[in-house]
Length: 517
Picture 1 (cartoon, rainbow, N blue to C red):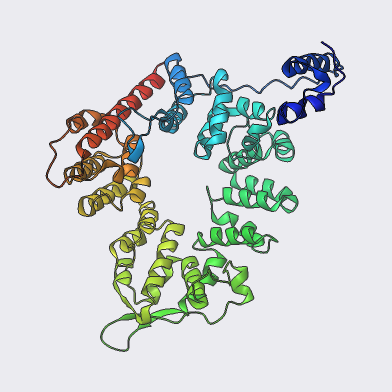
Picture 2 (cartoon, rainbow, N blue to C red):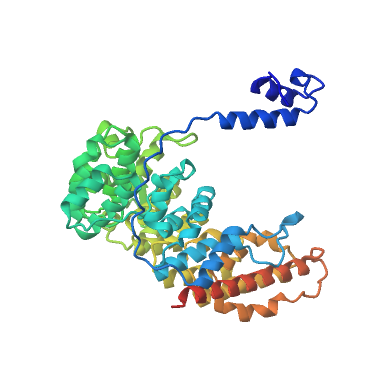
């Protein structure tokens, strides 16, 4: 078969159809002609010079998981979420894709590295799900980072903050300097963290060598990495960063300095804040008097106060909140008559400033990690927001946090518990797990549908202790349909509890497979 038709003419005819564009040169079979041209085009290619072979991947001394665990990981990566029917029904089978984070967490606990045959699938999974990236990149390690350089679709891994690089010893100054100057961003972030963990001053000195030449977004990420292990020794560097040309860098530096209660910035903020908040002694009842700032001067702005409020916020209340948030909480007992945090939170606040003042104290307690103030604010009147309560709870020890959330669920049910449960240590402590299961049982008996509590049920699948599976067996039966209950709700709850039990048993099996030697 011969034809003088060009490849472009064949493509045009194929796209438009032979009814609108006749087949070139009268050929009876367009596809046959296209096949001939394809062979000619391929045969006419000139061989290109061979590209240089990539350097071998760096070694990863961690062992691979046992064979059953590797098989399980391949299954989790290959499977899709369980069938979802209309109306929110998920069925009784576990959702394998949602178990992947738990598997990666367990693998990290045992110190395993990714099997070579699954690195590409892990990189693909982490590309599609950003929540997997920190765990997946740490698991694939230096081999995954090496592979990511060869595929543009995995370039996200080269900008991540994973500790995937093979890091030199902090004592090897030459190797540290070379990696710092030539490494990928992920390698440099991991290197900075490693050097700071060994010698904080050396890490800060390393960062200072290239600080002024770094891109603004990289300076921000490096600065943010100083949160771990932040000490008073970091103050001089952070003070200099207050004059950075990037507003985000300046803001982060101010936030970090305010987390150091003895820093000069914290002192300056305290001096400003105490001029706005004082004790009102005009009668027998002590109150807190508030006089918000009347301006936001250049010095306040340099210390991180943002002058322009968000839409709907007044300027003065916006400035007041930022000053109180950045002031050390230790200043307030002295200003407010030697009272404890609990007594201070219980004082009346004049002129309707209580909500603004308590919200700023909440942010300060979270930023400064002050458990005593967090307890006082959790018991006070100004923490109605679940998000606010969750942040305060995160400053408390794990056991106390779990007990408080269990008490909240017992008193208020599950409707506002999702964010509180999200900050509890995994697996949930037995009293917390019991409170969640009892609240789910109460919701079932009330005749509602289970998808009204799908968020909590999903957390339970990931966070309940797998040992709870046996106790949950009794809830998998279809209950008698009560008068006034939603039609078919009992069957849906049965499926939900069956899925929960199956998921907990699968998590137990995953752990056992990884624990094999």
